Image (cartoon, rainbow, N blue to C red; front, side, top):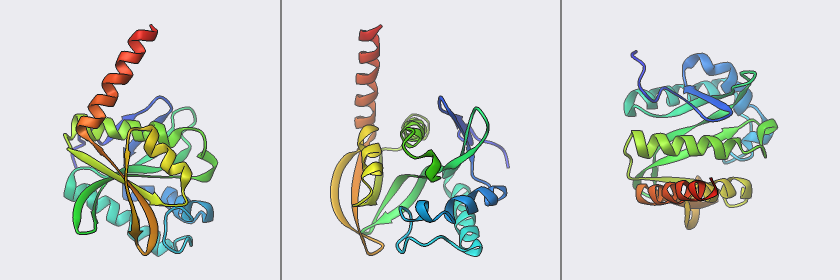
Length: 192
């Protein structure tokens, strides 16, 4: 398999590499963590080894089908596994969308890693892949994740059920991303 331009990328504190089957040990740590799973699954229960292996296999197959997907995240300083984040084709209410999604181990919550990697993924999605828009959604009770979505430019779209649970849905267009990037560039020039 020939690496592509998006197989890896970096943020100020993280490296991101295309998810592969040899990330199973990391995936098990994430998807068998009870705290992390409260934000990721309908029943909030950790996945069995077989279920986590299936999730990983589907993620690898997603890359093969769509030429994008999830990345495994590690700290640059000591190469600790932080979580996974990426882009995923989803069907929400009969409409095909691309979702920006992230899941971090609890010890990395509250340190701006989700915001940092989301900004890196937005750059890949809009500047490299040329996507027209992204969707992001989470449980209605997951206020921390909603804050990340808002911080990186997603706009509230609606509330509604997803996998039988109350969710909130946010959306960001390429034009919205470009306008936000221009405002940030202008602000940084003004402060220089």
